[in-house]
Amino acid sequence: MQTNPRKRLHDTADALNVYYCLCGEFVLVSDRPLCSLPLRPLDNARVLRCLDSPPHSITGAAQKVRKARVFKVSATQATPKYITRPDKSLEKQYPFNCSRCNLELGYEHTPPPLKSGGKFTFVLPGALTDRQGVPPPDAFLQDFLTQNDDDGHPPSVDQHSS
Image (cartoon, rainbow, N blue to C red; front, side, top):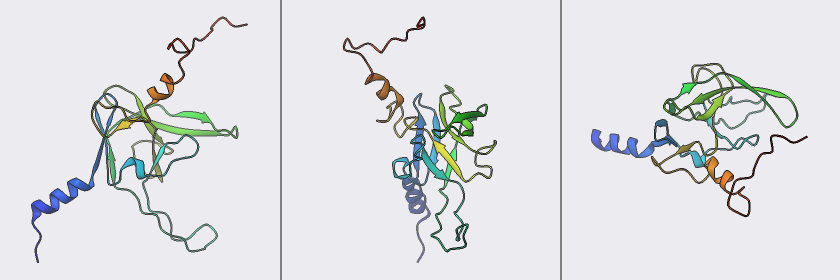
């Protein structure tokens, strides 16, 4: 029994999830919805696995193989940076930004180009939306707006404190 090539193409297109920057620029296509991906506890970034996990742990015990995700990122690499973790250790990150508005969208732990051998690609919370022009519920603006004072104004920063 042969399948219709148009049906196969339609089924494949339905299986893909497309994401955009908050400015509307296309950034990511993935085989899984972002909301179904695991969260990194450090910063709540979504974790896209780039490589299959090994079949054995470092102790040699058999473990479930976690399959790599199928995805493509369209973004500009930014300057590497170091962040301080809660335990005061440093972590080097290679960020990637929107090629239109330069908003930081995520990072990897390996040097450019994207998906060049590292295990994971991380997408920052609130950076991408599945509908052009509509910010996601976890967009960074939500946290900012909830920090307003009683008058509806953002908190002021005193630059002359002693």
